[in-house]
Amino acid sequence: MCAPSILSSQNIKTYGVEVSQLAKDLLLKIKEVFEKDLYNWQLKAVDTSLNGRDVFVIKSTGGGKSLTFQSLCLKHPRAIVLVVVPTNAIMRDQVIFAYSPSKADF
Image (tube, rainbow, N blue to C red; front, side):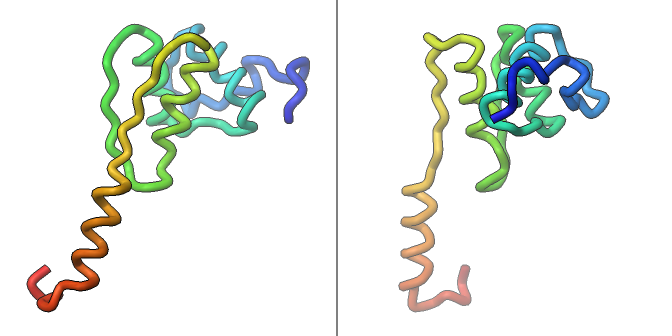
């Protein structure tokens, strides 16, 4: 884990994305806890959410959606973050497709 004393706003990659000081503070915490930098779309989502606006993100599996929104709890530990993952629906669709007699119709 990164030592908090080493982290400063100079260590935070923002990829040219303009973010608020509130977001920069959270990015330091994310770097400390998860040892990761966020992608520019994650920076925008975090900054937008921290500024009180709704955020809706569609990305592929493993794209970093959960980290984006779960990281907000580092700034507001009593916050409730709802991440909807349609994993069961995706698995069901894959099973139906696998057992489908006419796979060519898909």
